[in-house]
Image 1 (tube, rainbow, N blue to C red):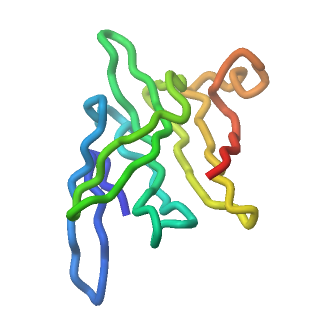
Image 2: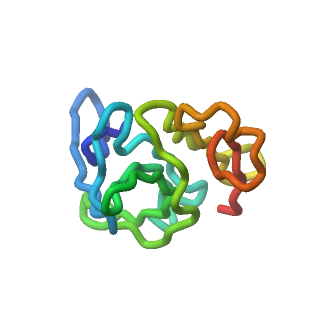
Length: 133
């Protein structure tokens, strides 16, 4: 599970283990923003890798990004940015991540309260993306 302020919670045998996530940008927790998506890589048992979707602020703007994480000693570290500067707004951030039956990563981005962005091929908002995991 993710917590918006930027932690990952592992639930095992009824016990909660909060794991710190070290990201290249500070997580924004404005409105519906934050650490919004998380999924383990299909080869997690060999690589200790996962994927995350989070909101950050860059000067006066707010964006979302999709990243690869590496787990080491109960702490996660951002190791690669897969997609950056995804539009962000007060609401409709998106951020659902799933590994498909083809072992690829599927990610949804929100429309950031701009419904027309889903039809705009120049916008990263309101889309579903596929990444080789």
